[in-house]
Structure formats: structure tokens, C-alpha cells
Length: 272
Image: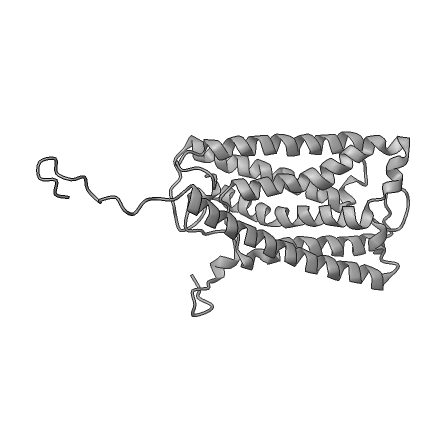
């Protein structure tokens, strides 16, 4: 382990390969015991909902342009997060997992996807309902059926991630902010390259999203910068929520008494 600062910071903290308690990845924050079943049941429900929305989106809108949209990137990430979390819970149920210097690969994979997905999903929800949603379109009878898919892909997606954040004990580190930030910037770069290569959206317009029209480079750059700042703020809020969750669950659920004697008293002398 390479020490970078005198106060205990190490290069391994930048990645998702190590953590003090492996049980933090398969136990619920709201249980006293050591059974992985409670969180497994929650993750099974979340995986079912996420997979159902993904299938719904593919059935309704699958086509050559499906993968160019950030919404669908987020939908894939949410599905991957729930399935990888379910895998961690299943593995902990099938065989006992013990703390080690390095996390198992499937735990590291889940933690990485989790770090990326929660912030990206919330940002997608905010961007859609603040910048892209057009209430006038919902008055069109032909668009009535699409509004429910919009709610699922731009609302329920964030709800799924928030349930995972609040139900699990998955840790959050401020140092990991670069992970969702990297994916967000990667999409911005992709949209620019896609435009430069002559790509269009499903209606033939030379952009993926109108607010990210690279023909107006100044406005597109401002949107990217604002979205980057928003993503950082969201990640910090998720980190703060995680700290509050841990303090509350430790104080109310996972608390232990320190007033009990270490050994039972002798029945004859009553001496501890």
C-alpha cells in the first residue's frame, strides 16, 4: 500500500478494491443480525423492477438510435447495479464471506457500478424534468402512452437507486467522485464526437439532445460545465446521506449495550 499523505490516505482508497467490513455490501442498515436475506429480498425486488423497465424500454423504443441517449445509458447502469448487488447478496448466502485485504471481484464490480449509477441516475432525472420535459406534449393523445415510460425511465430509475442507498450499508467515499464524473464527461465527449462524425437523432436532427447541440458550442459547453458541477453536488449529497444513514442505523438499530457484565455472576457468591 503506497502512502500518499501522512494522515492515512493511500492510493488504494481511490479504487474499490478494499474496505474494512465485507458485510457492509450484503447486510441491510436496518437489521441487527448477520443474515444476508433481508437485503437480498430488497435487491431481488429492485432487480425485477429495473429489468422490467429496461425490457419495456427496449420493446417500445429499441432501434439503431437507442444507445445514443443518456437516459438509456442510465437505465442500463441501474439494471447492472441491481443485478450486481443481487449477485453479491446471493454469493454471501451461498458461502460465508470473511473480511480480507482485497474485496472479491464481484463486490468491487458492484461498488464501482453503484458509485457511478446513483449520481448519474439522479442527474438524468433532474436534467429531464427541468430542461427536457415539455408539458404540452402530454396533451397530445398519441403521447399519453409514452408519459408512463418517461416516468419510469426518468423517475423510478432514481427511486431504485435511492432505495439501494437507504436500505444497504454500501459505503461512500468522497474520493470516488471521479467515477460518476468520468462517465458523465465520457458521454459529453461521445456526443461531441457523434456530432462531428455526422450523427443524428432518430428524427434526423444533427444532435442527440437539443440542449447539447454542438453547432452552438458555447451553449453546449455551458450545459456540460453546469452538469459537471451538478454531478459533483449530487455525489456529495449522496455521501452525506450515507453518513446520516449510518449514524441513524447505528444509534437506533445496530446499537449494543455497554452496561452488561463481561461474564455472568457466580450463582453462589454473586461475584462477577
